[in-house]
Structures are given as C-alpha cells and as structure tokens.
Amino acid sequence: MKVGIVDLNANDAQQLVTESLVESGFAVVENHKIPVSALNDLYSGWDDFFLDGSRDQYITDAESQAGYFSTYFAETAKGHEAQDLKEYFHYWPGGVLPAAVEKLTLHYYDATFELGKDVMAWLQANSPTTLWQSIDKPFEEYLSRDQTLLRILRYPPLTGNEAPEAIRAGAHEDINLITMLPAASESGLQIKPKGTDDWIPVEAPPGSIVINVGDMLQELTNGAMPSTTHQVVNPTGDAANKARLTAPVFCHPYPEMVLSDRYTAKSYLHERLSEINSIELRPS
Image (cartoon, rainbow, N blue to C red):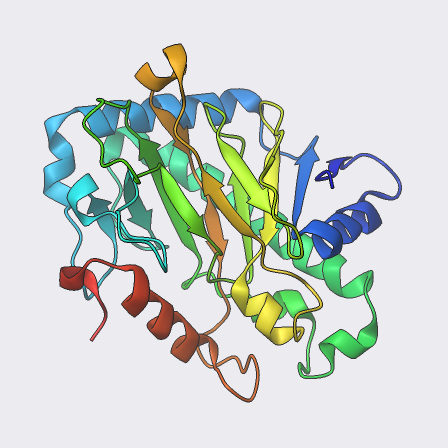
C-alpha cells in the first residue's frame, strides 16, 4: 500500500484525496496555498525559539494545555511506557505566541485551517451519504476554530542516552477529526495500515502537507474512515545529529458534537488526554 500524493491542481484532486484517506487513512497533497518558503521560515523561527531561554516563559499547565511542553512533559503514546523524544508548543486562537514567530505562525495557522475545512468538505462530497447520516449540516461546519490546535513539534538530536525503547513518537493514532501535517524538516514518519503488520514510510515531498484521519472521524463514520497507527522512528547516521521540526494542525470539532452513542467530542478528548499526558498535565 502506498499513500497517494495528490496535486491539488488536478481536476480529480478531491476524489483522489478522499480515496487515499479511505484506503490508508493518509494522503499527501502538493500545490496548496502555503509556499515552501513560508514553511521553511516557520521551522527556522521556531527552532530558534526552542534553543533559546525564552521558552521557559511559556511553560504549559493542566488547565490551558497551551504553551511550551518540555521533553520532561512530553506525552507517552497509549500502550507505551517510554515518553516520546520531543518537545512542543501548543497554540489555540487567542493564545500567546513568542513575538519573533507570531506573524508567520498566525499566517500558517489560518491557511492550514482553511485547507482543513476544504478537506472535510471533499470527504463528505466524495463518499457515501450513509456515512454522514448522524450529522445535520455540512461536515466542515462542525470544525471549531477555538478547539483546533496547532502543535509546533521539535524532536531534538539524539544524544545516545535515550531509553532503549524510546523513539521520537511512539505508535499512536490521532484524537481529532483530521490532522494537517506539513512535511517535516527530516524524515521518519511511518504508518501501519489496518490489517497489515508492516510499517510503511510516508514519502512527503518538501512543502507538501500530509493529511490523516483521526479517531473522532473514525468514530463518527463507524470505522469507514480509518484512523491509522503511525509513528516517528529514530534516525541513524548523520541524521541522528539533526533536530526534526514539523507543525501539525489538529482539526477538532465543537465539544458538544455527538460522535456516536458512546462519545461526544468533549468526552472522547478528555478520555484520551487522561491516557497520554504526564500526570501533572492530565485534565481534571
């Protein structure tokens, strides 16, 4: 199985994105509206932030889940014992951003949020109507800007002192509806499609955006759209001395959205955060 790379200028782009997401849970898109130079500037600016002392002014807390998460507070993938080898910064609209990266981060957030809405509309338009019987308005109208999270991720260079079982991102599925993930500064993303035992590298050309289905969408469609297990493996050779940066936008619905007989979006998110966050940062 290979994740489709779709040129958004193609006449059948919307159908191809939908088909790839239904088949593998993932798709890669090119020729979107975010220039490669803007992504490079985003990564460069945030790498500087993670390396200077100002990050300690933005340390997160359990109530807000916003700001800076050090490697000490990095989440642990469900079913794993070792924490992920990463640090990150959470931003929701209206939150505080470091001044040096504020403008480029807001521009990136806005553009990616709009693309996320487009993808949600494509999914509904190009899949059976029976999948959407539980909702009463266009799918993209359930997307909440206030709840949609930007996570700026930095995976530090390896030191050689990592726990033997620790990797940059342990095997997991995303919580939300869909994730918009720009191609990282370094490789390492792998997926394990349902029904297979093999890990498949995701090839994402520079400047492209990887899209994947999250658990909430899988729950909403009763499994028709798969939330696929993925991980970020540790690099080897010279790559082990390089940091890896990326900036996923986790598209979340309004908290009251009913996903199934079992969950609302709010109850599902609360359950998952309680499973993966450090004890100090679990929601009450």
